[in-house]
Image (cartoon, rainbow, N blue to C red; front, side):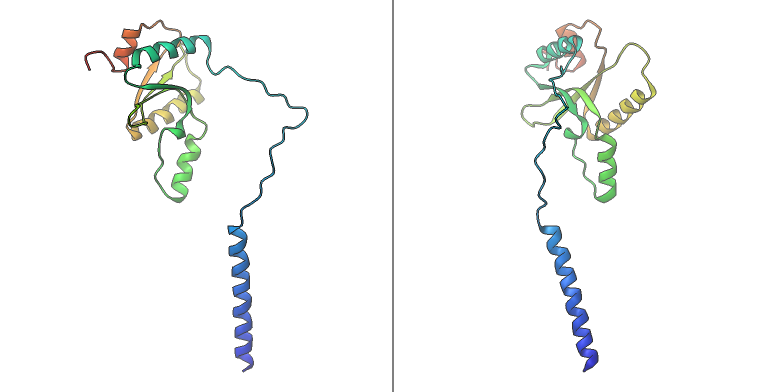
Length: 170
């Protein structure tokens, strides 16, 4: 009888602990409202340089009947990472801060079909080579075409249309 009472008491305590643990994880966590510290000043930052803006406008003219053009898009927003657990987290962590210069989005499917990266004329730094290689491998795995352009090179609209595969013959 005494053993049964102890067993019931232990089972009841285990149930209470389990119940408290489950209820504490399901209660929404209240987050404090973001307040800017008093000595911090924020100002708008230009999204593109003059050369990048010129290239953006030329790309937009070259693909206007085929794609929507977006600038400075995070890599993670153009791919769906389908994996579970640590593998998904690892991939997302690897691509988290990588940014794409221009993304060409098909207006019907609303999916990125092409990405344009800008490559400077001078030799890139090692971290830039690593970033470029990571971006290239992710885009290739997702089936998204990558085109590299030099921002300080003069392109015509027909040249860009040809480079991006949207010539009038298609």
